[in-house]
Amino acid sequence: MAAEESRYLLGGPAPGSNRRVRNEKLYLATFAAVLGPLSFGFVLGYSSPVIPELRKISDPELRLDSNQASWFGSVVTLGAAAGGILGGYLVDKVGRKLSLMLCSVPYVFGYIVIISAQNVWMLYFGRMLTGLASGITSLVVPVYISEVSHPKVRGMLGSCVQLMVVTGILGAYVAGLTLKWRWLAVLCSFPSCIMLFFMSFMPETPRFLLNQNKRSEAIAALRFLRGPHADHEWECTQIEASVQEEGLNLSEFKNPSIYRPLLIGVSLMFFQQVTGINAVMFYAETIFEDANFKDSRMASVVVGSIQVCFTAVAALIIDKTGRKVLLYISGFALGWGPVPWLVISEIFPLKARGISSGACVLTNWVMAFLVTKEFNDLVGFLTSYGTFWLFSAFCCLNVTFTAFYVPETKGQTLEQIEAYFRRS
Image 1 (tube, rainbow, N blue to C red):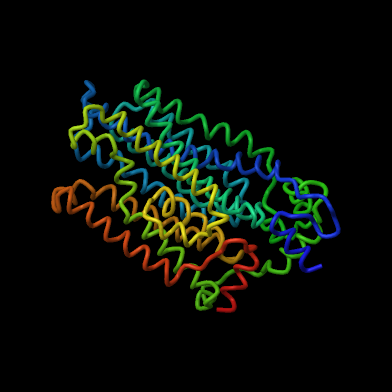
Image 2: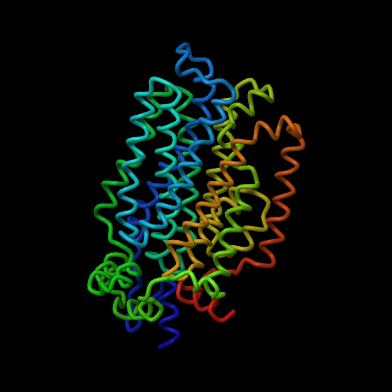
């Protein structure tokens, strides 16, 4: 029976059944969730086509100088850092599903503030609100997807988070070719509204429900996600065996099974940002203008398209190649974009998932703020060549860190990954 159970966890037949586990509704739940990262991508991409327009606008109350432009691009990361803290609280208190539904509110309200902006401070406030929603999204969606998936497809579905982020960035770049900044904000608000609608029909994750002693609801969620022919009772029992009902206290962070994955997750988020990717994506159009490209907007679209293509490749191959192999590859979209978000959704024990994920998201967005806000100062101090050589040096450190400290999680259940850290 053990071999049959193992095949079931990898997406094969359920124990005692000759039918395959059906994944259609699992994919539907994933689609509903990744509309959040799509919204998040529109937030990140919005500044690139809008900053050049706002720097030339006739209204002096809205016109951005170079310092204001850098704040307009980077202030979203401060909102996202706060969103990481808030998301870490919400994901454990109200659940994964409701947290996602709630974050649509600051998305929409933030864009309403931007659309109605009469001065620069309203632009900043709107960006802060959309950043807050982005921070919650970047924490909750990977957790939701990892907890509803089975190991055979968890890597692919988890990588769809970053795929939808870069798709949103590209969407903002393309729409920015024709839409003025207010109308672009209207367009960017749509994905979060659609997410709110679809998520209202999706189940909460079985692991959260079991942690809340809601076994019948967990069985119903598994029936939705796995289809009627899977052995829901058996999978529920496997999850229950690792669910810790007691709360987490600070003294438990002395336990290697909690602090080791936390240190790995925080380090992955730090290294992801010091590659400089967000500086490039936030200011893509400005960078190409400074490089004397004839059509800086189209050059930005080309960069966004390459990001989408290679992130899609990563999503397709990650369950075959594993996580570490992609982290050794030099391209951001193929490795350091999607993989860190996937790994932090896998390695934390259930009772520490909220606070540990919050610490990782906070680290990511604080570093994103520092990199994006200080990018122009770095260029002034080190020159463009020196700045990008510095980013390259950090990329080399990334590979070294991966080789020695990041575990391979391909093909393992979340419970097996948790057991690995308890043993080591």
